[in-house]
Structures are given as structure tokens and as C-alpha cells.
Length: 131
Image (cartoon, rainbow, N blue to C red; front, side):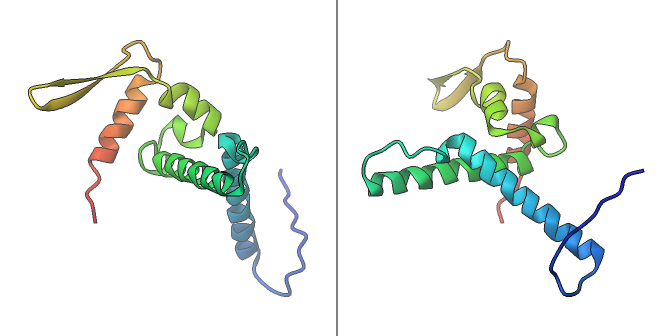
């Protein structure tokens, strides 16, 4: 048996509402931890304006990873991966861009272990109709 206890200073509210609030906060903290792993932990530049730009780029990368996990990798094991694992397994798959007959083709490394996961994710993103 598993027991869960909540210690809160809320005046009223049902247990289900408190649990939803707690889980949403945990998801937010996971996203913050992921942003720190992506590059938000250190500010590498000297000026404040440059570091502001760095923070915006890191947050853009974190948003793109979060949306990619929600849309492209829904229902797969990559949905729960941390940013380091996503980079190592999906985003670092080698490829070559070639142009022929007014078409641009991307040739991916055929020996990559997560190649089918990436191709299925890209197909899932291509199937989404714009609003």
C-alpha cells in the first residue's frame, strides 16, 4: 500500500485539486531543470545585453524541445527523455543536405540507433494541419 500526505496552508479545497496543483508545479520544476541543462545555468558572455540574448535563445531551445516531445514524440519513449538524452540520441544524428532537380533532400545516417524514432516524429509533425 502507498500513502501520500499533503501538508498545505490552503484554507479549503479538495484533495484532487491539491494534487493537480502539486503535479503542475512538479512539471514546471522539471522544465526549469531542463532549461538549466540546456544552458541557462551559466551566463557565458560579458555584457548584460548579450546575456539577455543568451537567455532568450536558451528558452527558445527549451520551448522547441518541449513542443517536440509533446507533438512529435507523443506515445514514445522519447516523450520523457531529459534534454541531454534528446541531444545525444535524436538531435545529433548526422545528415547531409543535397540539392537535385530543384528539390532539397536530407540524407540521414542509416546506422543511427534512434533513426526510426526521428523519422516517425518528423512524419507526425508533417501530418499536423495548420490552424
